[in-house]
Length: 401
Ligand code: AMP
Image (cartoon, rainbow, N blue to C red; front, side, top):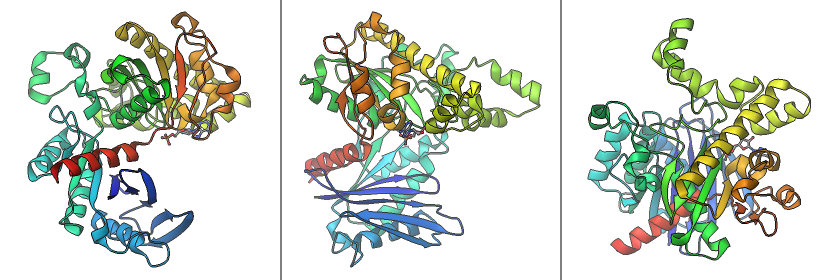
């Protein structure tokens, strides 16, 4: 069964075509700058790469480009649109309603529309992708895989904020958590690596990329996570502040004469590694600057590592122990220095690195980087959200069929 996985951003479509149930990747690519003067499609299939430039007005036209690339006589991989058996969509917010992946029906679409109020930047492009796919491939089943779903198992004492309860009731203000598909993928993979059922395991998963979040996973279920009502809470990220005292917001508004929206923009776009270092939101550049002696870059790395360390401590308490600490995403998979900084001094929790193995495990390599004999395994697991979306889509379509 050929499954097309779509991840639609406000001006981009990331896609992969999988052969399921094998999980083989037939083709993939990225269409960027939708709606701008020149859009760019980077397509890859069978070891070949193609770049196409042109003007793509919207997601509907964008998806046509994607399907044309998949059908292309030279670099295409399928003979006709009928060879796409199902489409799996990444959808950021599933509210409190969706704790798993679902076949997209008009009711599901209505719900995703309703959750725009909770994810105003993310759900609209996800919806555009779904609508475009329904139009272009009307007879093909479509499945929604939500970023929030994996965290739907958090107990209420973990997801409620201590603000007047009516705000939860009226506005659904609570912790939702994000990156759920990634946390679920590495949880499943970690259990395979450890050779134990995930039902038995206590894991802390660290998704450290441009966006960063951690999850405490007990028995295969998320029991807490660092992102909250929005993806702004928690860890230090590329441009996002993560946790701050909420009183900083009105203080800044008064001090700088900013509106609430402007302060939110500062916390989302001008903070994190970028805000602290003044160098970049990119970990590689901040690391380079720090090595060259830049003090602000150095402190940015220290704050980043310290925040992760604090959450590890908190989640060991939440889980009542720990079997494995799992690193994933761009920084988690590649920055051995950051992993070293994070794990330093955590022997008290049974966490100790094998420095040699840690240094060697970079570049989308999977591995156990913990010291021989230390009680907690430390794993690096390259994430693959698209593959998990394809798997969910395959399972749901098979059950429905
Ligand atoms: P992602 O959002 O998962 O693509 O991760 C992006 C982040 O990973 C950026 O901060 C990159 O700087 C970081 N990253 C990617 N490769 C490396 C590397 N080799 N060393 C350090 N950071 C890296």
